[in-house]
Amino acid sequence: TSPPPPPSQMLASLAAALAAAGLVLAVFYLRPELWGDFLDAVVNHNYLPDGRKIESLRPISFPFGHIVSVIHDSKATRDRIVEVARRNNGKVVMYFLWNPGLYVIRPEDAEQVLHPKITIKNSTRRANFPIFTKLFGEGLFMVPPDKWIKMHKVCLRGVSKKHMLSYFSTVLEIAKEKVERLCADVSSSQKTAEKAGKGSDQPVPIEIARIFQDFSLHAIVSIAFGNNGVTAHERSQIGVNFEKCFEAISKNPLYSVFRSTQNASLRSPFFSVNRRPPKQLIHGRFSLPFCLMLPTAEVTSINKAIGYLHDTGNRMVRQFRNDKEGNDEAGVEPRGSLLRALCASAEDGEILSDKLVTHNVYSFMAAGYDTTSTALGHIAVMLARHPEIQERARKEILEIKEPTFDNIMSGMPYTSAVCKEAIRLFPPVITTGNRITTASVRLKDGSAIAKGVSILCPSWVVGHLPEVWGKDCKDFNPDRFLRQNNTQSLTKHDGYKMLAFGGGVRPCIGKHLSALEMKIMLYSLLRKFQLYPADGSKADQQHFRVLPPLMKLQPNVMVGLSRI
Image (tube, rainbow, N blue to C red; front, side, top):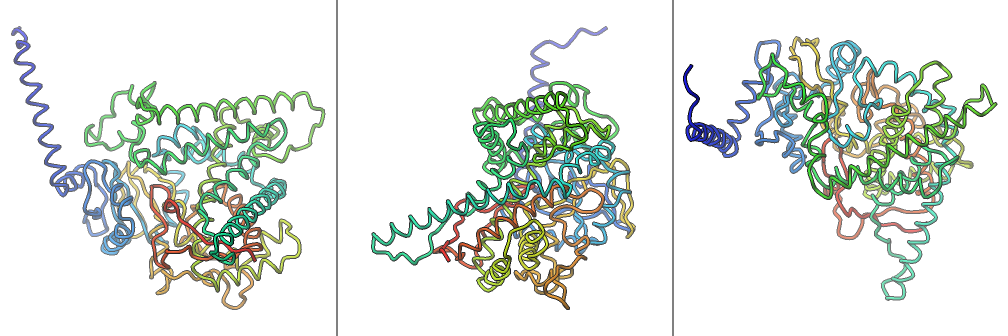
């Protein structure tokens, strides 16, 4: 056998390899079009019926893919997506890092993608966002189809109408409390302005996102854990730590870019297509999202927050189940909190472990907190910019003599249409949940989608398509959701055009909970306040920012409030 090369030669070879790798990376960085060509050649195996590859959106930033343009230039990126998709049967390939994703913008394609044939039989669900992966664990929104089918049946218990009725009074009281406090703050500000000689009749500018976040967080924590056995301090701490996780995503886009190592390895050009990466990268301690392993104060704070939430949730589940074992009220279904409802699923023989109850409680909280508060923010901004629409909604609300569940949920069709129209234009979640194909699939138009591709229906794009919503698609017009022959009832045929809450066989299970919170808050707010654009804001000013998967309000967006 030949002797091993001397250390100097090994070091020289290593240095040459590193230099070559550095040169390649530098070329990709300086010439990102080459990075796009490389990705299209290696991982884009999606074809149109005529045999052409489905085009990818250009330019593609190195190394993060399209995440940069989506964040920093969302409107222009959306327009380019539409332009490319129209040349490709309503489809366009998007890259997040080196992972291929397929945007489908035609409702007929969305219907097929969301059908059980693809959603259940030929795709799986993997979380792309590390904080969500760790916080929600094996919650309903995160699990693959085989687990989802059984878990969905159990989790429906928590959002049935009888449970929604039990949440109604809690949310209504919280909304009243927040609005009364807002009344006091506005009155105080007006008195201060009057003393300064500025006039007391001027609208008071309020950071509206903060108001709705406070309301939604208080409401969803109360719904999730109820009042029995939970102190006010514990509810407060749950809220503080839950909010910390969402704020991290809003403030630092890196938590959206860096995915778990398991997902990042999928179709990676650094591993051959037919060989999976080393097992230890997928199982064991390295399977945690690597961005949550960084030794920074922020990461430590996030991990502590998630640990506190899990420990508190598990303790409350055990406490409830222990109390229930010693309770003689057999056959009485516990109500008043999601946690109690999910624990009670054992009566049907579908037992969720303590950990799964905790993961699902926080999953529901996510559906009722951040997306709801963000949607309310978009609604408030649009009402402030469209006083005639605001006045029509207020008139409808003032006609309600008593705020019952049925009156709020079914007796305000125009206000409901306002909510849907705002969400159409500004969906709090910009795409449906990703469905990663587990086998190659063929769509009805003949397009072939490769295995390992994340298929998404981008509601933030579809909501602005004239071929779907008409020539006035960019206008804020709630009437489009009302029946033409009867303006007092909502249409029922949104189909696959309106996908802000998902669709098909696996929609957002918390959408009715979110609607309950939004309508109660609007009912309480519009009875007391007139909304105006804040001083200095323009009617066409962009009030939102995209931080995938969320469409948030810009920091410090203000709305003027005046007491009625």
